[in-house]
Amino acid sequence: MEIFSTVKHELKEVGLVTLYFFVCFGIILTLTKLMLEGYNIEFNAFSKALISALIVAKVVVLLGKTRAGTRLDAHHSLGATVLYRTMVYSGCTFLVLFAEKMFHAFRESGRLGAAVMLVWEHKDLSLIFAKVLCIGLAFMGFFLYRGLDRRLGEGTLRRIIFSSPGEFSKRGC
Image (tube, one colour):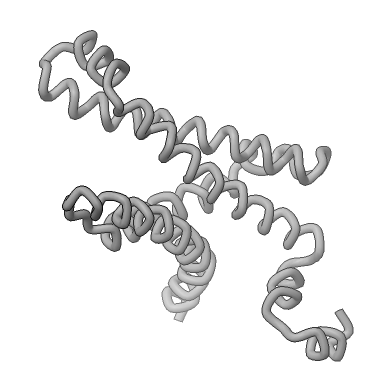
């Protein structure tokens, strides 16, 4: 039974975060797919959104449990905390996306310097910045929601959002 409770806890903790990022990435990639359709370019958004959401959600949950992920919570405003986390996570996103492009460019050119120039000079950099901006906005929304929920009391914000005004006031919240 302990394994069942651990799996249930993990699914609840990571599953909701994964669902949030899946919706965000799904919207971003669907917009990308719609834009590329004008050029008759096929693009499978679902699998990419799902895999990206699973990876990002696990990283967010793990880093949220470390000192680096929670050190500003007690002593700074919610806005400063959200901005700090968004900038740090977006910076890491930039590094990962840049490294991915570098990997592919290095495989093409065979030299590191040539790979850097290939990525830097082509439109890959603009695409990386566009992705970082979209993903950064998803991070900001997540951290803002999570911070508000913690300050109001776990689950209070969700009850405010998903219940009708009469139902919420009956609960005494």
